[in-house]
Image (cartoon, rainbow, N blue to C red; front, side):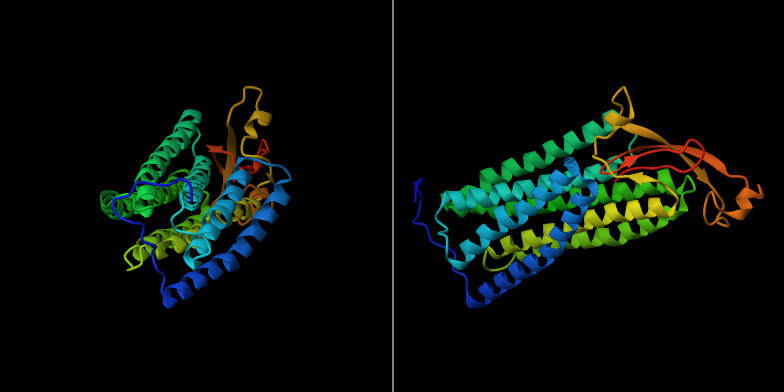
Length: 335
């Protein structure tokens, strides 16, 4: 199939044994089964927001990349329906993989930007991550595509090393962002007296290990005898990561509502509507009570002035849901 390549040796397709095909089928089945719930939650989120924004676009791009651009071509290739000696099947897979990485990292960055009040820092964080993941995407594509097409043994040997190195680099990036989010929540919310966000903190501390486990699972499958089986783990792993991010979004909103915070769901760049100067952050005034008070404005002790609230001002980034403030108590922010 066009184009043809000059190879050192004739192309030898990777044979999948019966057990490997069963494993591939199971992985694809788990991906589709779990993907049903991911798509359902994405539809609910889209209907709730009632407009297209960056967060929604990233979510749906991740789903399309996992299922359509990566998972389906890989399954067809493993089953022998599509020839392995085709540049186009590998280009489709590598493009799907690049979109997977970029979208999930930008979704994590958006979550982190909720707590970053400096506009320049938010911009440079997203741009820096885009360039870093883009560097990984380009270098892997330059090595991986010639290797799977068996252009030369040198490319194949380099790919054996660099493909594993790339997975480790991504694992470190993913884990670093999640731990930075945990640290920021502790310093900016918990330390300010917003103890209800302990629930968010505990959930993030627990779920970050699931996200890391997905990266470790991919790396583990890379050491199998068949060098292509690990490809089928990618769609499942990134669908799990996407569900984690949507769950984090829902949890932040639930905690906000449970704290008497009004949340109006708008797009991630709603700050242009909130400020005539196009500022991308809002000031959140929070009434912090002692643990004895259960509901901020309805607690009897507070109404009787038995407990004096302290006031802290936190600047938070909005994403996915807009923030509307009460001038005296409470706050809204988006996720």
